[in-house]
Image (tube, rainbow, N blue to C red):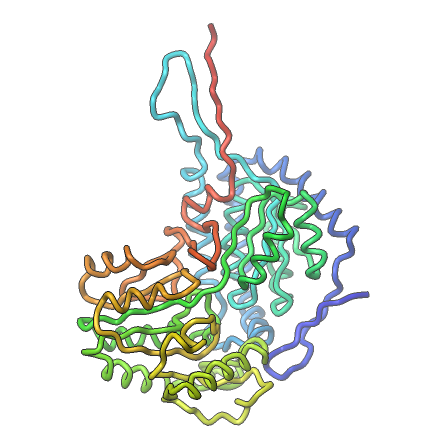
Length: 461
């Protein structure tokens, strides 16, 4: 029997192992989803919301078990708790706006004797392929609005966070969600690709690598299903001369290194106006040196291991290449476990970097950040846009209008001012270029999880 083994980054042990679903079980799950969805589509939106909120409470009730479980699975320190603040905010908001977001759109030019409107109808069966870095937050972005919109959901979670899918299943079962509407499946890549190409899935949402997104598109080719793809990122920050320095430093250090830098919208490169460059770097380095790297089960640890040793080795390679090309490393923290082949990695801050270095061009997804001096807005904007990715960009200034004007010229999905590494469920979550396509959360997210159906009704004649 083929199984999936979850290797813990804490000590390299096998933390969990689960059998892969048989092809027959996958087919049966899809048929259950289709049958359940037909009934679910007739359920009032208010009733759907009650199930979602009950699921949320059931999930939050598992916090004491889930927090160390996350640490064992992907290395996040237990001191930061679970992800349920964000899960609660996103779930509650998407339930709250569902009726308004999903209501029919009436034709703007009334005509006597006709009723004309567009309904937003469920897509059918939605497949969510979720990542390991924020295993609850990223999954809930699609699971809850898809169900609220009247679809059924099948979840395939990352092997690194294998137990998260089971927790979602437990929470939905506790909420008494009708059977078949949400199902957690353990599948390998070949089975996932086969399912995508079967024509039985109506929408897939995938969060992961660019290569993974291309594989999804290829597998789904010819089925005409809709796609939501959040892929790579290399999110920039621009610190202007008038920025509130202590605020910018504290937030950008956190934005770069929280979760060991394994954040979709984490800060990976910083451009600082020459007038405040030295002050910013001094503060950024001092703040970074406060991190305590170690076992994530220890309350004193503020940075745990990366999810896999190979991810840490990529950061080591990026750092080594940058140093060979003339960059300067400012932290050089001594850490016994920080060696090739180990997931434990100390944070690093580089200056003297440029866009000929992979650390400034290619996704790092780890605790390393390069800081460059710029002369003006034009140079900063050109550098921020010199990337194949575009998820978020943050601008640090006291001038709101100036920030918005700069944001208009940056190729990105979200523009932040004086904050970063955050997702607001009232605003659409989307990206440009190789970061992918589609949109999650907000009312626009509901548009991407439904299809329009027009009604042109001539009244009795």
